[in-house]
Image (tube, rainbow over all chains, first blue to last red; front, side):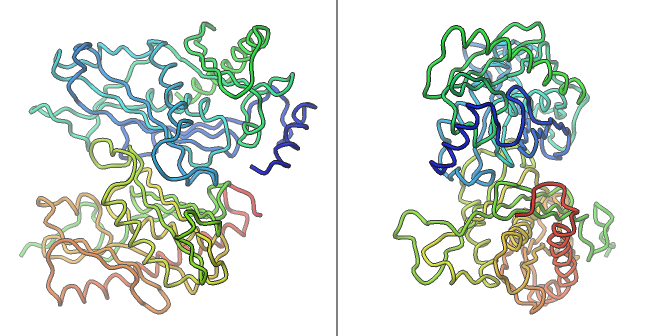
Amino acid sequence: MNRNIREHVRNNLKKGIRPDGRKLHEIREIKVETGFLSTAEGSARIKFGDAEVIAGVKMALEKPYADTPEDGVLMVNSELLPLSNPDFESGPPSAASIETARVIDRGIRESKTLDTKSLCLVKGEKVWTIAIDIVPINYDGNLIDMGGLAALVALKTARFPVVKEDGTVEYHKRSDKKVTLRRLPIPVTICKVGDLLIVDPTDDEENTIDARLTITVLEDNKICALQKGGDGVLTIDDINKMVDLAIEISAEIRKKFVEAN
Amino acid sequence: MEKFVRPSNRVVTETRAIEAEAGVIKKADGSARFKIGDTEAYAAVYGPRELHPKFLQNPKTGVLRCNYSMMPFSGDGSRVKPGPSRRSKEISFVTEKALLPVLDLQDYPNTVVDVFIELPQTDAGSRCAGICAAAIALADAGFTMKDMVAAVSVGQVRETLVVDLDGAEEHMDENEAADIPVAMIPSTEEITLLQMDGIVSKENLLIALEMVKPALKLIAEKQREAIRNRYNGASTVGDLR
């Protein structure tokens, strides 16, 4: 990003002015679409304004890990597609894309929303592996929050493929079996610029912030995952305010999840 | 011999339903979405921009660089591992060759024009859908083009020639079908991509290439319409810049 533009965005942000005219604690308009991919067992398209992300769920029957023979396996992956933003390059996954996937994964895993035992078919032999892939189509910031919602919606709407008598998967047929979500973990990223806090940053805003904190909030306002990012520091007072703000925003986003299902 | 009925009940020259849209990715210099049946491709164009490493630069012309990639959940069966494969590299390579004949990048020496093609779902014919999306995206980005490039497959299933094979046809009788992806410059009827797997006679190959022309011209019309719609205010995403 051009240094002058960066300074301009930053100086305005510090005065409380956002490039798209939003209030500091205002998220972009959220749109949710589901079940539009024929090849994925579950799919979700999430738009925050013009920013667009899709998530797809693929399921497979595999041997469980030796130390958890009765547990299904969850895998969250994200890729910063060069298609979605001029700053992304082809090549092996960047640290940023791995961080995104891991933070989303942490929220889902630690909330224990998935009953991994229910994903076991034959102990030690055959469990469901659920892979969630999150890909931006138009990247404009805040991928963790968008991807976190996308992952949850894709999981919720996914249907297991039919298992044939010989124990292999018939991908062309879907059963009525759905994934049960026991909790609704919503990641919310709060950014700090100077003395101000902003939510749902765009790409340009992300490039100017001092620090960020992703707080994954459950429906009872408990927290199930945290990730601090950015080069700057946070005070305990900052964190106190950020958690309050995240709880408020998470309720707004969770409402969209409920509406979509 | 019993007459072959297509699983989709299409007549032999009929393509699947087509959707084409330009300007769908706001951050890109040009972009498009092309959907044919359950095969869907996004394409984004970035450039002309500086090419690194420097030794790849050409002082006489800009370089077209295409990148075809299937999203992990876009495969017919289990998850597709992300990242380049031998298959995706070859398709990227032939996609470049399919598009280059209509482009002139001599005004942009030492630069690269990147075309990223991503498929969220596939049901056969993905390289053709990718080429169709890429051609719209290049036009959307404002490059001077001699014409569109339209692409679709034609093939032979159970001794019958058919246009735009779907997955059910491609996999029929243990993948016995011959599949011939074709890309064409519609105004001159010149062919810019031609591949085949399967077995056909020379006679049938020539018949197939004649038979696929109307479908390609129809696709080219959909592609042009996508560009026109962008300027009629019918586009749903993205601003005109």
